[in-house]
Image (cartoon, rainbow, N blue to C red; front, side, top):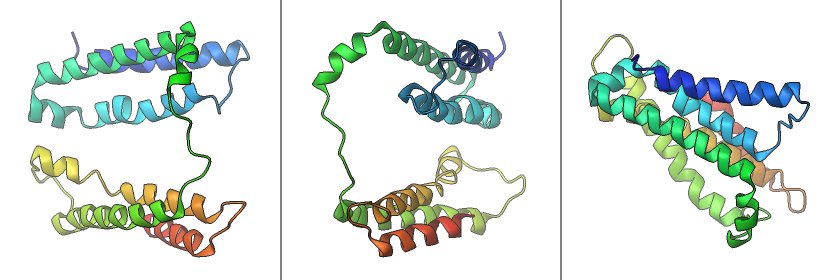
Length: 181
């Protein structure tokens, strides 16, 4: 069996689910399931195929195949629970999401995210590109500059709050996002 079989099956499940909703005219891009699936595609399909050789070299074929199988099984299980309706019945047990982000929490969380992203980006610049060999841990750390974008989004959303706009948060978020591009 091909090592990427379960990755392709995961992609097939998502594609079939997408096309059945489009053809059935039930597709709502803002439904929670689509937000979940868009987030699921990045680590379990795109990264699983892009970093496949690295993963096999770092952790072995058996572990990579097992992880890909677990990702497929988790996706199928999620879609089953999502559509069986038991999730809605149990949803009352979960706490309600916050109506807005606390400006203080955003101000405390954002700087460490930016510093961590800059540190990881600095590792990329210091080491350079090319065909150098990286340890598995170093390869993982090299993929973390995106946390600066998480900080930027939090700052922009907090700065654009309708009830209490905070232009300094918005400016900081836009600056960080601009530095990323």
